[in-house]
Amino acid sequence: MLPHIKLRLDAVEELKKTDLEWTRFQNGYFMDYWGMPYIKSYQQPFIPFVDVANKMAAIPGDGNTPVVFTYSYDVAKFVVAALDLPKWDDEFYIIGDKVTWNEFLKLAENARGSKFEVYYDSIEKLNSFQITELPCHVATYPVFPKEQLQGLFASFGLLMATGKLNLPEEKAINKIFSEIKTLTVKQLFEQTWKGK
Image (cartoon, rainbow, N blue to C red; front, side, top):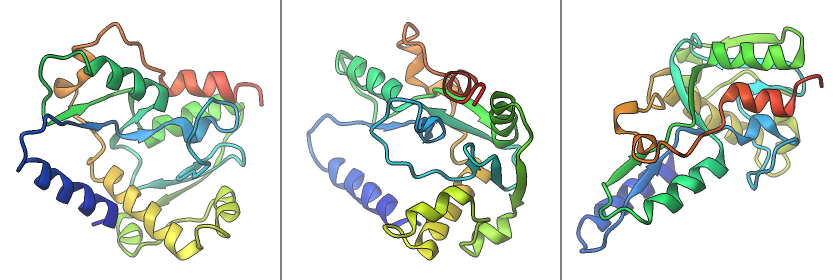
């Protein structure tokens, strides 16, 4: 288990012991990373699995498991809207868009107008905390060493490949606030990478 996930779970257990009203927002993976540098975001360029700029991908697993991706600004809209709810559930799901990595890759290729160099990292490889290195990873090594980055991205890849980020739509806060329209992965690529 990733250390920060254990800390979050421990915090939830402590919250359950209080009378505080609290909730957790589960939004899958921020899609901002794949629109950089052409999208407004406060995220750092920490890009796993599909390097759109360099037209290369290292897909976790077979790429056929749905994954939820949500733009950070859409997450903020739902968080603000939830402040007006009379009661909070322990957990809210936010679904910006849900696509498989193979669909995600196809959308990126369509936006860039060419095929990418593609690799598939098996569950076994991910379990060994290894991933296929992408060109965009190298720039992060001075602040996030390669071995640590590979381990982190392998852990994320396992979560995705095993369906942990295939969030249930029936529990999505999107149903409560249907007026909030979210950015789709296709729209992200069309707005940021089309023709580049």
